[in-house]
Length: 387
Image 1: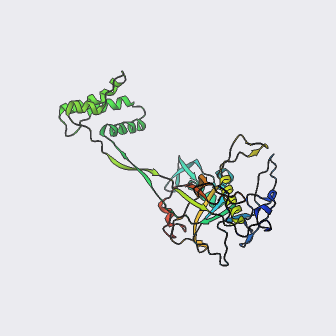
Image 2: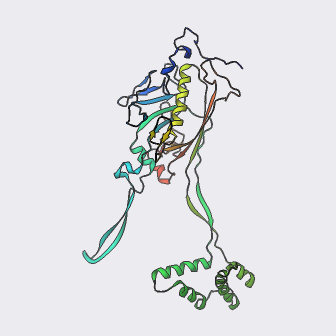
Image 3: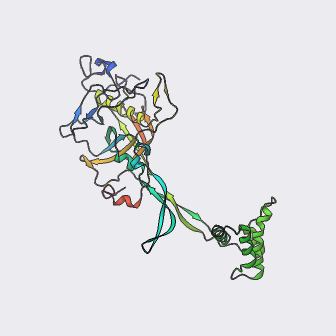
């Protein structure tokens, strides 16, 4: 199939045509908008990004300004492109970078005081430092922004929040074991065997006849038989002896929180060479930022004894240039997956410059920290539906 072309004003005499551009000057951020950190003005540029030498064998590329990668490129004077998804790429901040925000535990000696006087007794007190300083809090507090990506708001939007509950049981033998364990801790001189002997010989179980009492004792004794290679359980002994089973006190108990995942799908259909470069820069930037960092480049491949965490992302739905008044908010996310389909049109078709005519990019973001009830009382949590 011959290549197709839908770009406007293309031709040999068109200075904006790819075939008339200097291919050696094409970079990953060509045609991007840059933001001056000291100004809120967005400027368009087609120049290459300036990089600084970090001292490594290869170049560690550091952006001098913020790249603002917007798709589609605004074409009308008002710049109205509808509701948007804003993706901000920031450096992942580890606890070791800031001692003040580092989590820790310390054990201090506290003098006991009664009636305003020290008793001479010293108690141990456990103190937690910055226990709530999460990765999301560290990143937002010390943002090192690398670039922005602004995309049309995806068509399939959803947020799913879940927690984990699980079934749990506790029968009388397990409850007795807890009591025995507490007795051993409170009175170390008494052994678990002595406590078990007291339970089997001196404790009467209410509402059971003497035969049932003996069955319970036999069930406990069955543990000793298991040491000889048998497989006897208290449940089976009691069921055989009395035709009953232990009340397991089945209950659904809270077990923990889960992290939210957000899948997004974006379709690119470049309308001109500048948008083709913009799409290329967006795909390249996201794929590079989600990759781990080896630290050094020997001229052929990345290498290093340790690898560093990839960059992370702060997401925001926007409407009219502001935070969306209805949709959910996000905590800091990691980009866990990027899948790019360069033949989204159903067949391989490109423009004259080899840019695919239709591209689909699937991304999966996962939040670094779970959502708690108190998050809905924060400034971000009070807007729209919260988190």
